[in-house]
Image 1: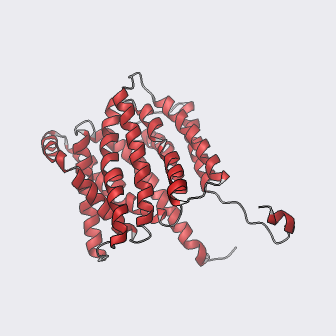
Image 2: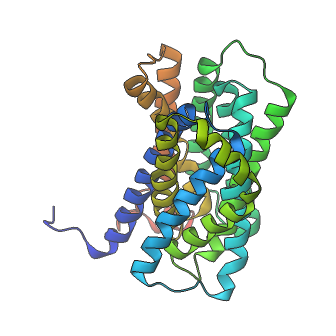
Image 3: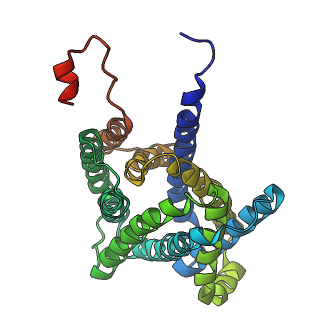
Length: 310
């Protein structure tokens, strides 16, 4: 075993580390949203989060002196900023006030499937059997987690529609962001996408000021945390990883989020998960492992006829 990592594998492992950081931060966001959402309305929470994220990213962008994104990157930045940073965050916050957490998790988790379908159709992403099998396993796990988390509250038609809109906005935003990363850096795409989202949410500025005047400090701190870590840093590491793989594979990675949310709720909120929840979380992680795995290379001794049939 070599003492140092081969040079050709370093980008792959860095991208995997970036994706891991992203899903951990996004999982932590669910815990913070639960706290901040009790004091802030959906639009105000989204705007406050995006403003904190845009400010953080703006400082990093200025220090790094990366300049403006090229013109070719702007269509993808604008669409992802509107649909993912803007629409997704507002309607998801709103939807989770209308339906229980389990129902919201089930509906939003169709997002990775939509990413795979849109990526295949619009970007030409391949859909190898391992990816499809892994997504199926993870989605089964997400269903188990969702049902186990469902409370006694009824799911309103409005809430279901909002969660579905959130899933579509997420999927379309990811697919739009991928081409932009071919022209601009991950930091540029994330910084200006977040800024577009914040501008779209400016109509909620008055509500943000009113909510902030009455919100407890813990809720405001959670909103700021959402802006700095799950938004500014995690969306940047997401873009870095997305630039180095397909949208479909990155979408499948987010199926690790429900499993991590279960673990974090157990540790931070003392919400002891049941056996079904734990089993569903394990399926989510197993599916991600399958989806992101690669077939082992055939050896030189493999018969020529077998190689040609691959």
